[in-house]
Every structure is written in C-alpha cells, then in structure tokens.
Length: 392
Image 1 (cartoon, helix red, strand yellow):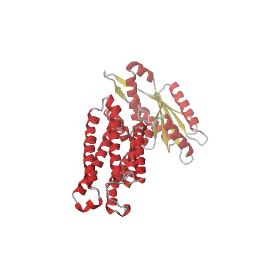
Image 2 (spheres, helix red, strand yellow):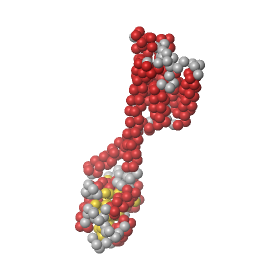
Image 3 (cartoon, one colour):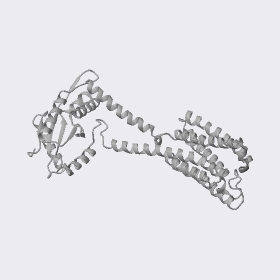
Image 4 (cartoon, helix red, strand yellow):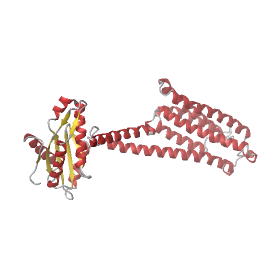
C-alpha cells in the first residue's frame, strides 16, 4: 500500500509539474500580464533615454553636436512617458479581473508605448538604425505575445507616421533627426553613431533574449504536447496511438530483434464499477498500471489498450521470457489489495494472452493472435496465461 501511495503521489506530481510548466510559458500568460512585460520593457527604454539626455546635459563638450533645446524637451517628454507607462503597471496588476480593463487597457498601454517610440524616433531620425530595429523587434515580439488585432491596429498609425515623417524630411519640410547637428555629415558624426549604438544594442539584445525564451518555451510546449498525445491521462501509460507506432517500428526491425506482445484484461472489472463506483474502478486501473510498470524491463512498453485492457510490448524477448514476465505481472495483480473510503478491500485478477513476433505476421495479425489467446484464457476460467501461436 505504501508503494501504491508513493507511486500515486509521483503520478500526481508529474501532472502538476506539467500544469505549472504550462502556466509559466509566457505565451500562456493573460493579455494584461503580457502588457506588464511590455510596459516594463518600455520603462527600461525610457530610462535609457533619460540616461543619455542627462549625459549630454552634464557634458558641455557634446553640446556642439546636439540641439540642447530638443534634448531638454526630450528629457521632459521621456520623464512624462516614464511616469505614465510605469503608472499603467498598477491597474494591469490590480484590476486584471475587471472585464473592461481586460478589453481596453491593452490598447491604451500599447498605444502610449507606440506614441512614445514615435516621438523618440522622430528626434533621432525615422530611418535611423535605432528606429528600424525597435520597429521590427517590437512588431515581431508583439505579434508573438498579443492578438494580431491589437498589434495591427497600432501598426497602421505607427507606420503611417514613420513614412510621412520620412517624406516630410525628404522634401525639407521638417528637419531630420533634429536632436543632432548633422550639417550634411551624417555618417561622419561620431556622436550620432555612438548614440545609435547605445540604443540599438540594448533593444537588440533584449529582444533576442525574449525571442530565445519564447522559442525555448515553444519547443518545450511542442515536446509536452507530443508527449501528452501519446499518454493515457488516467494511468499515465502509453495510449493506443503510441502502441501502434511502436509495433510498426518493431515490425520493421523484427529481423534484428524479435519481440513479444501480451494483452491482459482485468477479470470481472464491471462488477468493481457497479459495487464500488467508477472512481474506485479508476483507482484500480491506476494501481494495476503501476504494478505492470514495476515488473517490466526498462526498454519494455506498457499501454492502456482500452477500458480495462492493457498491452505489454516486450522487446528482445523470447516466448519463455515473455511468459515469465506475464506470470510475475499476473501474480502481482492477484496480490494487489486496494481499499475504498469505507475500508473495504478490493481484489482483482487478470487474464493474459501472449503472441510472439514472426516476420510473416503484421502487427495487426500479432494483436489478433494475442487477443484470441486472451479470450481463450478468460473462457478457461480467467486469471491465467495462454499463448496465441505455436511458433513460440
């Protein structure tokens, strides 16, 4: 009983860990939680801007290559945007369960973020490396994290602003990159280049790290989905789909490695459900699956074939070895005692049918032979083992 309880706790712990891992995947976060992530990134960007503005204002040697009035204006604007964006984090966190907040706040938060980026992009040049990298990285990250509707609604005015500002600068209606005193020497201005590098690298590194996290979590999620698609959720054994795949693979490799198939069916299982309830029937199935796993070798497979029927696939196994394993499993199931909530003991037995692989037998034919042997074992009195072919 202690072993059964320990195995049951382990099974529940595995399921809980899968659940928690899924909850921690960023793509599974709520929209408002993703908003908080974007707001934090936005605040970091504006703190970086304030750092640059402060550096310029405190170092007179750079005043000759910048427009000080624009720097002061930008310092004030970035301070305002920093306060607004950081202030939005609180309602996203506290009011996350309000329907109207869930519906409208993402548009407000992302919209203010985009407006602030447009303002900074105009000051340093709408076609500058900083603007282009920020535009591409935030667009792609946004499409991964949020609904397309939210991102595209913000994308249209942002793109229009960048294109229109670039056009007005091209026809000399408005200055290009007014924060800098370029004087026709755009690429010879070392301060301009270092300023671009100052913003490009943090944005690029941050987005690459976020992309790597999302990609790793996506790959983990794919592996988890693939794993869950092959597992019976009740007994945590392989399901029929995985069993069929394994049989097809073993059939192709049969000439190098013979194998055996064992079908087993719990005797009078319907009476357990009728007398003790389906929840106790499920408990019996879990206990039997754990016993089967306990008596199999590491490279063998156990699966739930349907209802109260299980299948064992024994790799590199002769008929004698298969019969020995089947007998150990039969005796272990017969000795199993499960108690219900009222303290009543539930006993169960199982009937077994064995079939040995043969190069002329397809997997479905092999299963048919094992099934016939199982049927004969049940017809002969149950709680016994019979073989389905004579070439064993």
